[in-house]
Length: 304
Image 1 (tube, rainbow, N blue to C red):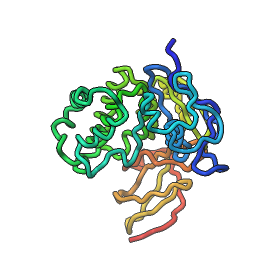
Image 2: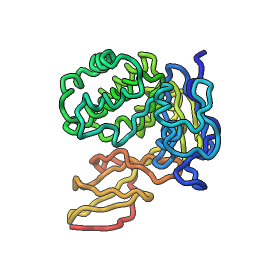
Image 3: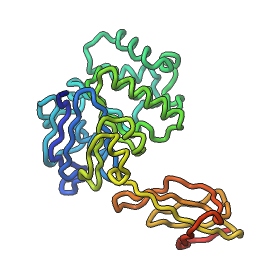
């Protein structure tokens, strides 16, 4: 049985003392595992990664890395110990070149820099081809690969990833997740925060579901994936008939969307998130005559 690399016990953390975002969270990442953290917006997923990385205060509980407690250890010291972190936003220096961005990840390592550059360029050939270009000129997917490369150049044992698919095209998401898989297969444990629950759970060994700063569910990724209730999504379908005079602005249980397509009928598939505001996941044109039931929604606003 593999040993725990990161252990989180009863963690209480947040940005202001007395207003904890995390309220007693437990988590374990074992050697060479991929563990996904999912849940509704505001559940504390990104906050958990920041707490592990020493970026925000800890007000209770303990965090261990390879059996040693991480207490008042600076972020750069965690990098030296073997933990790397890729945030969701501002994860590259856009005014610097790719090569300069990678150099920013080298200061904490004593390994031969030329060898590390060679390894990163071998893993991410597109970075080598564009190494003299500014990071701000890269596509979203290429910037994500650069962020991964800069994290990996420190030779971490554990990689913390916050929403690596955010804002990317489906093709770029597939590419990024394939690289993440390759990274894990090279021996790096991965703690992954991801809003795309199905993608995350189909990818990971185990998953944790957070809700309102607490553990809601945990289990094998495949088990959580098969049990929709356990990872927070029950679906309901709502139908609304539109006037031919214009478009509707509608509200479904605190989630407002604006219809852009102007068909006669629209079906909204709503994913219910642990009692939190619901999330629209699917919109499609349908033929109302083929439906057995029609559900009328409240109209909030009408415009031409």
